[in-house]
Length: 572
Ligand code: PEP
Ligand code: MG
Image 1 (cartoon, helix red, strand yellow):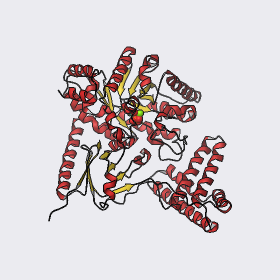
Image 2: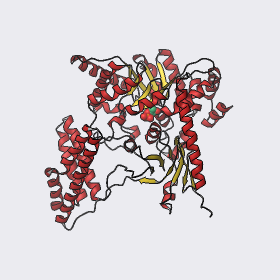
Image 3: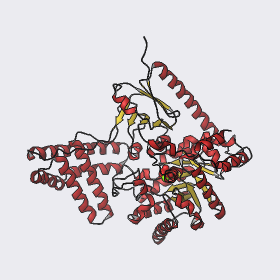
Image 4: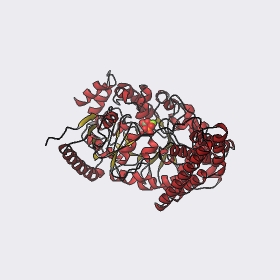
């Protein structure tokens, strides 16, 4: 019997590995209000029933997470259950239905917003945190009324998650034990969904134009296969396709075994230049794997993932604990903790930011310090306290100029002074900034002497240099990290760091691409930080290269007109 061919969709490779199996589609729908209601009492009954369902679900979640040992999260869900049954909130919503004839969705949304506003107006950090909880519960009741269920993704069997795009907060909470792979219609390899997939070792393909339409067109029940190294997605793969994917999976497992065996080999070029290979991580759980793959420290700890998918920020003690775990795993090697980088594609529910037309160009990362210095001071206090356990470096994201470095200094002085006042033991911390905005590189000479290190974030640097949103798949042509404009900026940064004698590293995704890494070495970079799963391939590339040859190619590439020209030069 002849089997029908699979449908091939070409996307962009985002996280290595292959997967095949059933898929589950994630859609973040918004709840639609039904307008004026004719029978207000029936609508009030609907409201109470939905609120009760959310209350019960919250209690259930509390039991689940307590069973898994997370007592603090359990408290949060218990508080949610109480809010869902809070007579003040429900009375306000019911009054809105009876008086204004609003439907239950509009009524609960308005009531939750008004309670949250009142809590925030009291100007107390704790109560502001409660405001976010109230909004969260209001949103869940509205989803329940709209029949949308919970926003999270639950997988009843091992599956591939398919979506237009995935918010990073959701990617961070995907059930990893059942997640085979990720296939996204939109997004790009430098968006955070892809970065997290690499961190977790989950195969992923992004920018797969046409995927959702193909799945909608009668292929609903068909399984999927994807290859995160070639960017290939097969809808309804044949038996032969599946056998081919399984053979690839076997080869990848063998490669990973070899990667661990080679972890102790030094990353030194054939002509004797040592390159420091560090890990980018997003949670303490990733530290052990990074050490096993030979990371000589952490060049970027994206701490924002500790802040996402919660209803209030982690306490100072919780942060000391999380940072301490990573520091202990790597001691005496350094761990670079990046201060909170939220906003852009990483919103957090308890830090309500104004809606902005261009959030990537808005109040993001360190720019939040004006409004919420307390969050950064708490984080810095945790860093200084955790530093008694090992070598700690702290860096600020999204620094544009010397003024932002002054802001960092001010926050650091405040955190240290408080700790010294309280006679708490603190360790030594090196201070640095990320170079990810062109202005920070162009004016580096005005502030670098105040720092011990700088680290180039090529993901953002590329999007800001070429004015190409890092999440927009239509702009792939502008997102080639071999673009000469990016290379020129990197060279300027290397020169500024050399002149002032401070360390420079690269922690954008570019550092984990063996070809790009060779070019960076040629430009004078000696420290590369990347997803741990990329370390082995980059180490091999370093060991196979001559620094003198790379310098020659890299310097010539600065005069090239396009990334394609640079790539050609690297290959010849
Ligand atoms: C970068 O911008 O290159 C970077 C490393 O930070 P993030 O990807 O978290 O923005
Ligand atoms: Mg960045």
